[in-house]
Structure formats: structure tokens, C-alpha cells
Image: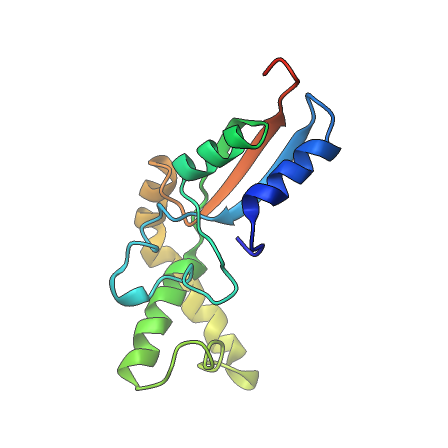
Length: 152
């Protein structure tokens, strides 16, 4: 998601990986619940993310560039939901999102942050469990296999 031309990037990777070799790809999941939150509150909306992928779009891109999708995992992390919540809080407080990330808790407030994250993790566990079970977690961890000339 950080390179301007992902298709060219994966095609180049297919040139240097021998047939039968593997690639491991980690990227935000455009199909996640966090990504579907309204008002652009998703942590996936970042100036560093030039493109976002769902499981389907990743599979299609891999197939077009000489790879076969072998396995997908979609873990969900409690910090993704906390980032949605803090984005909403910054907006309510009238602060812009991009320049103020990480400014809510600093320095001596880190112990407070740790406790808040533990509570937030416990509160969001049922949602994260459902996300992972239904493959809607906020990350895509992809295992892809380099195809040979005959497509196998």
C-alpha cells in the first residue's frame, strides 16, 4: 500500500522469486469493519497508504502478476479500534487528524494509556473475535506462491 505501482512491484517480485517460492504480504484490510466506519475515521485512511486492498482485490492482483493466493489471515487488533475512537475524539475537540496523531497521551501519561488500552482491548474483544472469525480483521496477512511458466 506504500508503493505507487503495486502491480509493477509484484511483477518484479515474481521475476526474482523462483517458481514455487513464496511471498508474505501484510497490508491493511479494506474489507475490515474499521475501514467501513463513517467520516474517514479508519486508521487505514492515511497519507502513507497510497492504495488499499480487500481479500478479493489482493487475490486478483496476485493472479495478474504471476502469483497464487495460498492463504489469508485477517487478525484484528484492539489498537485499530482505539485509533478510530481517538480520531473521533480529535474531531469533536476540533483538532485535525493527521498532525495530531499520538498527541493525546504523552510522557507521564503512558501508564494511563496502557491501562486504557487494556480496558479497550477487553471491551472490543467480542467485536475483534467476530472480525477474525468472518475474515474482517483490520490486517491482511497473505501467503502467495510464485507460479511457474505453466501456471502451476
